[in-house]
Length: 633
Image (tube, rainbow, N blue to C red; front, side):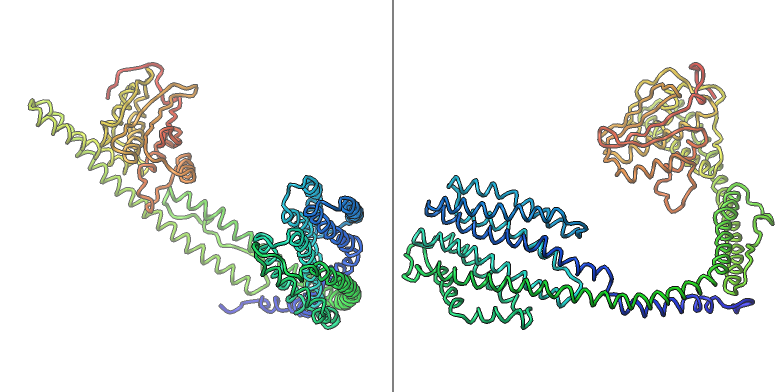
């Protein structure tokens, strides 16, 4: 439909969004990966290095020394004074680390988690030392105890080096990996002490040492592949040095030794080889950490300068965009808000009320019910939408009226057919009753009783069609009927009535006008109980007087229903249901719901202690007679 007045909404949206989009895209395409928070975070790394990384590295060094001293004490039973002195050094380093780290604020969630984990591991140092003092622990277990503490510090370093500058991150991550390789070297030194003290390599030590060697060499190789020339230079020299080659030969020698063979003559130099390499690695690691820390501040300052320039230009563009957008926003929002309110009124009030009225009255809609939607608008597209809503309203009203008339016609067809069947079935029941009285042969009488029961069930199904059409069955009683007779009549309309046991009810009666509907309601529930429970089980029908009337419980021993489906059924039974042809498999529940709503009866389904379901029917006191009475038509 071509626009009839005003400017097109596409043009307005183009003017509204063009400047903000162009300015914001140009701004954030340049600075999307560079935020002020990233620059400040880089600057904060210096503080973390001073108050966290450096003291924790000091702790690691002292723990590595204590690990070696503890293992030597275990395998030689000598050096208690040296061990005590080393523990003092470790405790001082731990105290300094905790004093500095507890003053840090605004840590990232990852850093907080890893710092907490490291402090938890440091608390376990007392247990490791206690095991060493007892001298009953295996040396490899001591190595593992210290290693767990050191590993926690490296996980903290991993969280610390998560910097926004990718090149700087790769270098920092590589330096951290070299630190881990250094700690693995410390573990190897401890294993060498065990081997020399025993004079042979046990299977467990060889297996553990082999894993350490593989891990150290892998970490070393991966780290060097990421380091730039300045950081890689000292490590490249170390790899070509005789000190490193001699230690590689020592590693290979220990891995190849068996428990049944003694150590080679070169074993005496293994601790010296490890000590020489350790000094070189410590020196290189300290230089690498210092170099990485010095690179952080220039990178952060450069990032903040870029952010400042981009932010200033972007701020001007954003302000211009906002001012231009606000100029067109007010009018467009007013039009759309009016359209929204009119559409909401049409959908939630007018059409809903019309559909509700058509359920009971299929007369033609009044002019007020089909009044067109009116919205004051200056935009052609919005005006076209208003006209489209009016067309939709007209089509929806016609469809609703047609459907209501169709439903009314179908309902009348159901009622007419059901009334005819009801009349024929009533005559058939009278004929069967006459034949039963005139027959004395047991076999013929049993067949007549079966036909009588089948006809009774057919009559109930015919009455169900009348009830679904919101009509009342033709049968009625003038006088109150004992509730026992009502329940027996309901059971008599069920195919497997032999499985149903009606327990003695209280001496109360039901008003005659409600007997047919209540009996029909109970029959539907009893039939459901027999259909959805094993044929060898029984169905119990109990009743008791309550302060609000009479409670009837129908309990089966079936499989029950899931809680979600049970809640859905109870929700449907709690209000007047509208018959849905798509759910004809639960026709009985629709009938129960309509009968319950007609007389104010509350029907609830609940799990049974036997595993099936219990249908609880609460008859209000208004349906009960003041005193028991004989049943009669």
